[in-house]
Figure (cartoon, rainbow, N blue to C red):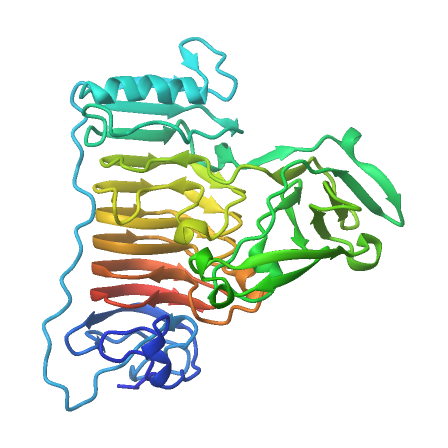
Length: 460
């Protein structure tokens, strides 16, 4: 069995400072197959319990080649290692009882017989949940452009009473977005193909001392024309002050504006940038790609739904996209926010959903008994999925591809990101997974992870 690098030592992954004493990674080819890989923390062993055939395997089924960036932080079992029991399989979320459930039908504008707006639907749901009545919120096809962030899920019996939020159709027809249309009438021609529009949001920059150094990783704006994203560029010269020089910031970097750059000389077709400060401040600039058509949309909502403190949740047949989120709150400021270590969310099922083109991480897991099934987490600027302390987590038929584009453009190479980047997880089973084209790791289990099993994965 081939040994891959030595980036795990004593249960510590590369994201922990101790890991940097352990050496590098080998390169390799993509893995494709139905073989099982399991890891038990007690001996830091990965092993194949059936052959996973990959590029470079012999016809007789030789040992697979694992790419360092596709499956990071591994130590393979040596022939002399004593046998270990297989990793315990996760069972994921239990079946939730919906006996006596009330259904609330929601549409983007609240029109239609028996339908209400998104916020009105959630407020009505909370009232029922607080009384112990399960709720099914059924979102009609369309595009939803608002946030639900201020509900108290700790009221009455709301935290533990089942809540199903589902689209009345496939996920690509029920879209909850963080972007708004900027009408063409608001765009001003600046000459030479450059256009600009007022930008009142002033998001600024954010980063921790471990965040990628490039400022593109510290911003969170997104701009689209039709379905086509424009790539962000930096239009402000900024001095970055490290946390070691300002400990009162608690690990957060300080950014000091110096001057604005000329958008005409910086932006190329298919790129955009924002200037928050004078003399060009409060505007978004863009050069549209040749032949592009459709409405121009900018991400303006940091998060779409906050479920902090809520357990017993089902998300089904929904797209969550284009959130203008960043890495604050340790990457919990995502399109859908679940509780952190102090308020974990338990018994969660995510099925048939899409978390795509969000500025930072797509989703972060904190809690017990989660199932993510037949869902896509692609094209997110930092990680597709990450976690804090979690237990009994099941992925089945999940894709996490083409993530980490923002952090990578800022200089991140493999420290805190991945298609999947897990911390402190016990009993994690990954079935039929696909992770292609992530700028860093495809799958990565960092510090204090145990009982991890991967069965049937395409990692490229």
